[in-house]
Amino acid sequence: QVQLVESGGGLVQAGGSLRLSCAASGSIFSINAMGWYRQTPGKQRELVAHITSGGSTNYADSVKGRFTISRDNAKNTVYLQMNSLKPEDTAVYYCNADVASTWYRTSNYWGQGTQVTVSS
Image (cartoon, rainbow, N blue to C red; front, side):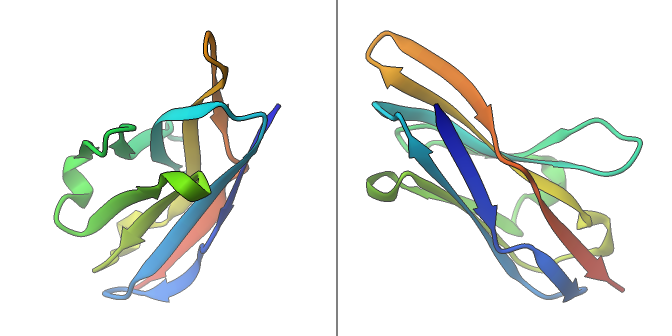
């Protein structure tokens, strides 16, 4: 089994910054793609940023130029640096990862979520 534990959420004023972290632990052979999603009440969970095992990234249009996703493969950790935060970035942020527990078995996992609130 694999656990994803997020940290770094909180309350920040508009224009401020936060850095989210997500550490994977458990039965890990390798980690493929990792990503950050967010969700607000009454809306579907949406992709914020995604990073492959090779480091290729893609972002939602709404966060391009403000957010940066990165990963430390040695620590099985993915980060989301969020700058120039806006009130519309307020959401619960979830970490997601495709984790191989063996060379032939891959499963998708979610973290428990961390609240990010941006005040105007």
